[in-house]
Each structure stands twice: as structure tokens, then as C-alpha cells.
Image (cartoon, rainbow, N blue to C red; front, side, top):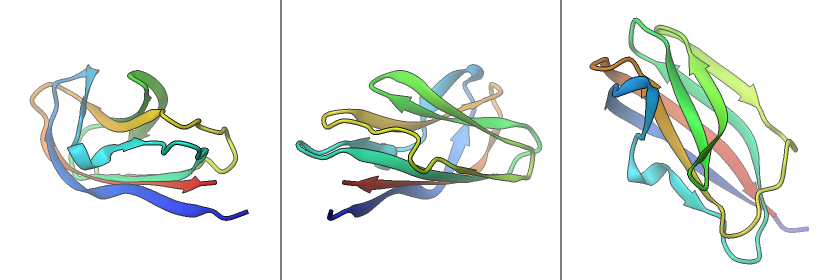
Length: 115
């Protein structure tokens, strides 16, 4: 079986819109599973430059799928290997929820594999 790795990753500035109002960090953090392909999330890593908790939200077709809280000036690593298959045509996004007005930078790295 042939597989290809895919990554949603980068370092992004943000300004919080509210802990209950996640927003897309950047257009580069949107991925659509190609036709005829199944994708599996492998891991999430993230870092937070601020003095407050922020949450990265993995959104699947407009609905929250997983929440990754990142502590103040901290990081997180979550293994997701073989948790589930994501079918073709599905749209994934990494969004950020943070206290309103909180400004900072996050590092995100979502590893996926296409099979």
C-alpha cells in the first residue's frame, strides 16, 4: 500500500476572538482529502507564546473534531495514529480559540497520512 505524508504546519500570529469562538489561523491550515484517498491523522504538536491557555481546534466539515489545549508558554504533543479514517472530500481546518483580545503566536504541526 502506498502512502503519502501531509502536514498542516507553521508559526502563526493571532488575536483571540473568545474562548468559545475558534477562528481559522491561516488559509494554509485548510486541507481537503483528495478524491479516492483516505486520510488518517497521526499526531498534533503545538506551542503557545502567551501567558494564557489557548486551544487549537481540529474542525471537520465545519464541526469541531478534536480539541488541543496548549498551556501558557507551553507545548503539547498528542499521538493520533490509527484513531480513524477520514474519507475523500472531507475538509479539515486548524482553528484557534483564545481569550478575546489575547495576542500572541502559536506553532502548529498536524501530521496526516494519505492512504
